[in-house]
Image 1 (cartoon, rainbow over the protein chains, first blue to last red):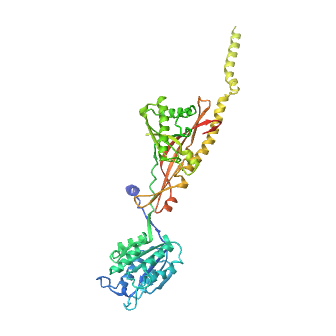
Image 2 (image 1 turned 120 degrees about the vertical axis):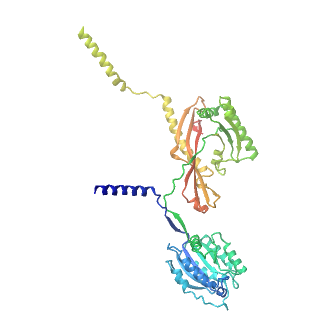
Image 3 (image 1 turned 120 degrees about the horizontal axis):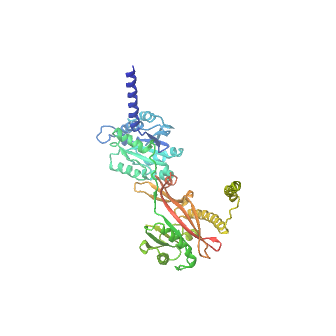
Length: 349
Length: 148
C-alpha cells in the first residue's frame, strides 16, 4: 500500500513537471474586418454555359462555391444577404449571418437557366445593389460570382468606381471569376484594380478547401493571436546632447564676457568624461538664405570650440560642424520655435 | 583634598555632558548667500518647467505634429518626441561674472515614441512605445533679473 502511494506520488509529480515544461498553445481569435457580407450571383444567360472543360455550368459552380464559402464564414455578427444579378433579384433579405444561411439561400437559386434573352447588365446590377448598400452601416464586403461578360446597359467598371467614390473605404468589391473569355476577364480585372482591398479568386483558386478558407479569411476577418504579447524591447539609450543659446548678436559669432559663465559650465560637463569626444554643432533658424545660415552656424560653432580649446579642452576631442538651417529641431513656423532653433549643441560621439 | 577633587571632577563631567545640550539649543545661522542660492534654485525650477512645455510644444515632431512614414512592409509608422516630465533635474551654480551671476543646468530625458498601423489614421491612434531615449543637458544663464 505504501509502495503504491509512493508510486502514485512520483507519477503525479512527473506529470506536473511535464505539463509545466510544455509550452502552452497560443490560440487565435477571429476579428472581423467588415460588418456586412453581400453575396451576388450572376444569373445571366452566359452563366448557363459550361465553365471551361469542367462539364459543369458556371451558375452551378457559383452556387457550389457559395456553399463552400459559407462553411468558412465565422459567426461574427455580419449582416448578410444573397442577391442575383442580371436580372437583379433578392434571394434572402439582410439578416445577421448564421451558419449555413448562405448555403440554404444558394440552394434555392434556379440553376436551370437558359441562354436566350438573359443579357449581362453588370453595370445596371451595380446600380441596383447601391440601394442595398445605402441601408448598411460600417464596412461591406460585396462578393460577386460572375463571368464578367457585361454586354448591355451601364458600364460595369464605371459603376463599380461610382460605388467606391460613394462609399470609399467602407466598401470592397471582390469579384470571383468564372470568366471564359478575355473580355469577361478584362471586366473583372478592371473592377478588381479599382481598389487595393479587392481579393482575387477564381474557379481554380477556390477549388481546394485551403484556398476557399484563405479567401474567406482575406475577405472577412483577421486572426489575432491571444498569446501573451512579447514584452516591448527596452528603448535604446542615445548619446547625451548638451544644448545652450549664447544669445549671439545679430550676424555675430564673437564670444563676449556674458557668454563665459555658460561656456564654463559646458567645459565642466565635458571634463566629467575626459576620454569622450564631441561634435560642436551650430544651428540657425530658417530666416535668411541657406548659404548665409550655413556660414553663420559654422562661425558660431567654431567660436565655441576655440574658446573651449583655449581653456584647456584638447582640440582632438572636438569636431566642429555647422548645420545652418538644415537640421531644425523645432517648428520654424512659430517665433518660439525659431528662437529654440538658434542654438549650439554638443553631442557625444 | 579628596572632597575637593570629587567636586572638581563632578563639575568637569557635568560640563562635558551638558555641552551638547547647550550647543543644540543654539540657532544655526544661514548665510545670506545660501538663502539667495535657494531662491535662485526655486526660480530656476519654475522657469525650467515652463521651458519644458515650450520645448515639447515647439518640437517639429511633437505629439500634435507626429511624423508619419510608410514602412518597408506596407504598414505606417507614427513617431513623436516628448520630454519625460519625471526625469527633470535642476542645478543652479554661482558664476564669477557680475552680469551673469548664476547659471542653471536642466537635465532631462527626451523620449521618442512610435506606433504602427495599417493606415496613417490607425498608427496615430495606435499603442505607442518608447523606442529611444536621448539624455539632454540644457544650460541657461541668469542675466538682468531673468533666466535665458
